[in-house]
Amino acid sequence: MPQSHHPEIVFEHDDFEFTNLEEELQVDQRCQLVLKYFYLHLQQQGMAAGRASELAFSADLYVRDYLLDFARQNIVRPQPGIVRIFAASWFITHTLDPELALLERHLSAIAEFYRFLNRQHYISADELAFLLEEAGQVDFYQKRIDSFLSINGDGFVAWDSECPAKF
Image 1 (cartoon, helix red, strand yellow):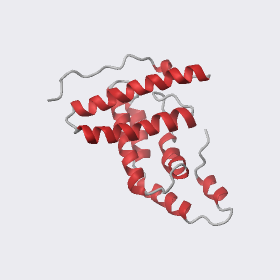
Image 2: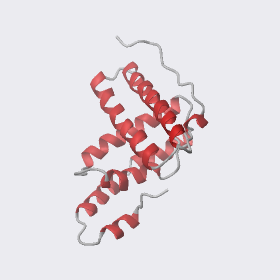
Image 3: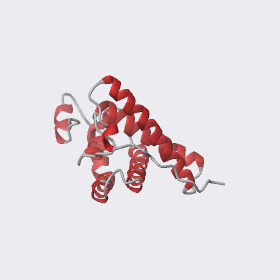
């Protein structure tokens, strides 16, 4: 039976800023803790452990591989376009066989993770709204996947220019 205690995150927004490798490693550890709290929160909300694990795994890929390692972003100071770049460029170019079903699973986890951060008062309702809107652009992401898989010759440059993975 799930416990009624809800874990609280006790970090400040600046605790997720980093400028050097040592700070990045500290932020990575903090992110691991936030992801653990996310996983526990999902279970406390009645989600089966297996499903909560799947969402936490996808959120981990997004947070630690994409936001921290690639985008160099603070997880609690989301920038407009951050989810769109993940879905329309980074995911596609960093996945052996990009397919919409897998991307949709990641987007579902990302949306749930940002809802969790909003409930914890780490992101605002306005930030949550633009993040959820970006996560919902599934038709656009399907077109990006299709066009990526159809690239011939030196067509990558044109494809990438439509939604560059740059910050």
